[in-house]
Amino acid sequence: MGLAQRKVASTAAKLAHVSSQHLKALPPKSSLVPGRSANAAPTIFDPHSWASSQPPPRSTLAAFAHRIGLANVVPSTDVIQQACTHPSFIQLFTRQHPDQPLPATNALLATLGNSLLGLFATEYVNSSYPHLPTRVMKAAVSAHVGPSTCANVARELGVMPLLRWQRTQTTAASAAVLHADALASVPRALTALVYQYRSIRSARRFVEKLFFSREVDLRGMIKFRDPKQTLLETVAKYGRERPISRLLKETGRYSNSPVFVVGIFSGADQLGEGFGSSLKMAEYRAAEDSLLRLYLTRQPPHLVQLPTSTFPDAPGSLYEAEGPEGSYAPVSLGDSEVLYGSAGRAGARVPGARSAAAASAGDDIEDYTV
Image (cartoon, rainbow, N blue to C red; front, side):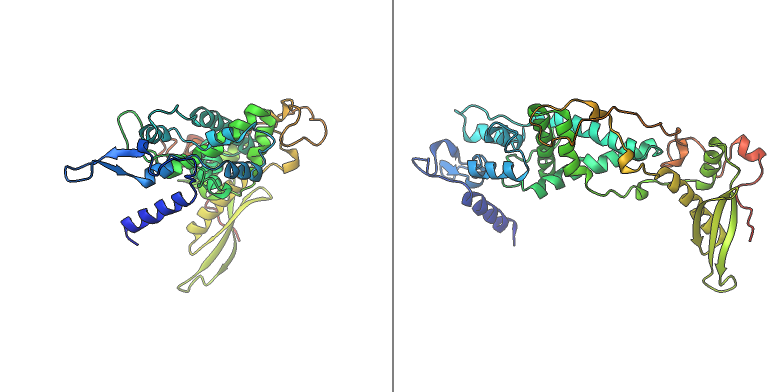
């Protein structure tokens, strides 16, 4: 299907959902624009722009509010329509309806909702993974409530037929507005609506059901430039015995495809385990596994307490609390991260370099015992 055919199909789909019974004549005179060339007609009608500028039906807005559980929260469907109207829509609306007042947009709601999403996600990730490095925690927050996730949530909620926006190009004063950007603003605005008409605890529970119920793979976000050196520094920081590599299993040492399994121990405790086609590769993976087991240690869900859980709930909240809220006992903060251990760009260490403490203790963890 060519570009022209796709545009015709899109216009037909938009017109199918727009009612014209309130119009005395179609096309309306206000939507006629001058021709772009001397040979063109004096006025032309752009059905795609006209259909995009029309408000969605009240029944569709009411159905959407009931579907996401906000029918008893917001006072009217006008608020839902505002949450689904991106600021870029103003330019299109002004061109199609120059004599009508400007519609309310979700600019302020999206800004407030973005701050609330960042607050809820940060406290959730920090309380669930107290040892997570700072850079990885920021990446995890973005994975939970970032622009891509917000856009995907909006699609799953069925926002696309209700969204009013216009694609814009990059200018000196503003960045380009894409479809994903407009979609991402809707879940943020809905979060702000729950906070505005209920309470911060209701907004947090709303975010938990939409965002935090998704699984995020944090293991792929942690990268190490020198995991053996990082492990040496981390074990010394905790006051444990110096790690030692031990060869646990091997097969095919003198063949074309040998496999070695190496474990790293601190005293009698095994910290991690890795395999590889060489001893160095197996030891590298074992050191990486040891660090991942530390950084990805998760607090049990029944022990996770969030600071925003201490705020009192407003009467008639969206998600009623089960019993009175207990007092907040903050969890102990994890030790500071090894700066060069998260992404390889946080420190100025040269690959292979060792600290004075590690150098005085001997070689790296390359003592193999069977």
